[in-house]
Image 1 (cartoon, rainbow, N blue to C red):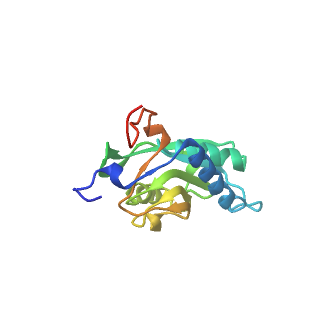
Image 2 (cartoon, rainbow, N blue to C red; image 1 turned 135 degrees about the horizontal axis):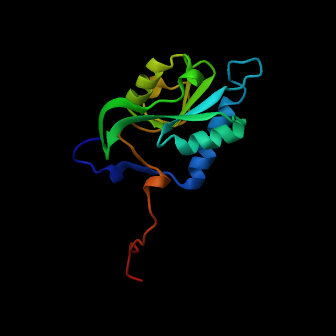
Image 3 (tube, rainbow, N blue to C red; image 1 turned 120 degrees about the vertical axis):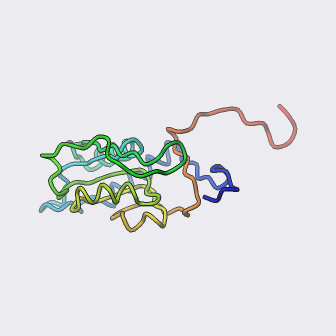
Length: 169
């Protein structure tokens, strides 16, 4: 995002309804695509924190009962830094990632998914939203947004009064 533009100036606001619909669409796209004979997944691993909501919806829709998390820190407020794992999923579950569906809300630069992909190269990586720089790190996604778009997720927002465009109340 350019320095002369505030994040909200090219913002994509996602409601709870929209994230639910888009995460369900992601589940439909992934249905039957798992590596076993029935096309099922062994487990869903959410990249926390943003991946928790879509992962829960995907796991519910696909009837996957084994769910774990991986915590990767790559953002501090709205600036990106070096990605590092601060909580890993169960080793005995993960192996090389075969049969594991890794879910996140968004791929931006791709650094987070690149790190996780190095750890679990055979996992399937799915995000709800994808930006062009990160798209090569994703196997499945629903909506592409431009690189300079800032996505506002419902868990980052609060409802508040807005003054009318003309006049006053």
